[in-house]
Length: 509
Ligand SMILES: Cc1cc2nc3c(=O)[nH]c(=O)nc-3n(C[C@H](O)[C@H](O)[C@H](O)COP(=O)(O)O)c2cc1C
Image (cartoon, rainbow, N blue to C red; front, side, top):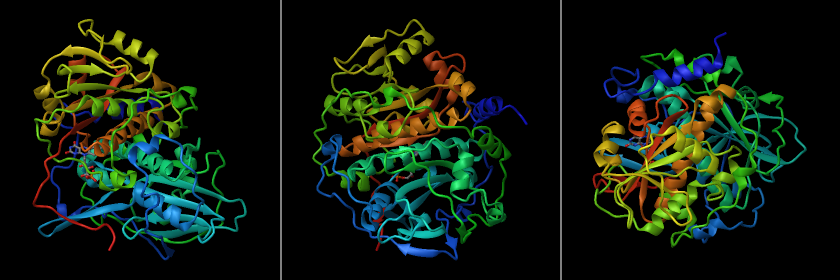
């Protein structure tokens, strides 16, 4: 067997986009043959979930305070699933129609599948259920005679959904998407007064728990990769074992035109344990109050990615500071869910923020990490403290719009934004210690992006994830010469320009 550390690092290196060549991907795309966004489990017992969303009166800033816990019922779990994984709208343009969900997804391809494990929830059948977002229902995949009550959510990825369009780089997108999904869960759970906890299971154990290792069932369909199981009760109890199984998964792409074996290799190489719980993960936040007057459910359900920004709006300083505070430990419900020490640090390209010089800034998310990053970066960066409370440092004053656009695969969203974030991960050392850290760094970056997206939405701004960037060109601009640090994601925030040609239809009729 090849060395998992070497395989993981090699995958990352070969899936970089370079200024003169993109990572290996399909030469042609048949849009009519896009893999099905919804996997169905045939021959399963289907339970429709209540569609009502709870806690509609709660304002976005009220999510900063602990909320009373709802009981687990079909109504509350239906509400949770709508707010973290459900469809939020259908969009139509000419003959094309596509759905959007509570979390963004690279290429809107949605590789993540959600599972609900319910034991002794009054009104719900015991068992492992596949969540079917298309009609907000549960497909029961397994069961047994359970006695101990509990509720868990499980997550898996179907890499082919992304690989169909993005080729070898696709596994990165699966992991970034999963970060968004986990963050979406953290916010929705906070609204219901729940304290979810990631179970310390490796992907192989997750796969066994979700039945993804039942090879016979997957013989003719696309594989699902186990990712993580979350206990909704804040304790570490694992989900039950099953002795009855049912159902057959649907095939998503009847005629795949390409194969990307390196994705299977990196999936296998990065199947390790979650990080240890860090005391820092729960450290006190530098609180920056939100002046949003929006409701939390409205913020979540109306979240969208901007397809274009206006290129001129100046972000008020209070909005900017709230965005930054949400990224710091304790600044968002997400950091109560994520157990690891902060290893991903934003470098900001500030274009238009009230009272701030345009330029390059750093926001190290832990003090010790800031010192290490400073040492790794060139001496010409000033590291001038730029906020009385937040660890924001000006590295270099400069107009960086063209650079931001070029680094982000020439996309205008990176230059027409008010600010574009580059997420820089502590890279080689954590991966050498545990190759699964490669997945977790991408999750952490996706979580950071999700905090920005929701905080922006609450403040009347909007975000867009940017998975397409020229990796080593970013490193060159930041003077990061080796693999101690690597960029893993970009995220832009600005005032959106909406496309009037699109019609919006309700999520569920
Ligand atoms: C990991 C990730 C990478 C993305 N990369 C890009 C990108 O490079 N360019 C872009 O315009 N949108 C990008 N997006 C935004 C998606 O296109 C968008 O989330 C998707 O179309 C669904 O729309 P919604 O977010 O409004 O629900 C990305 C989203 C994610 C989560």
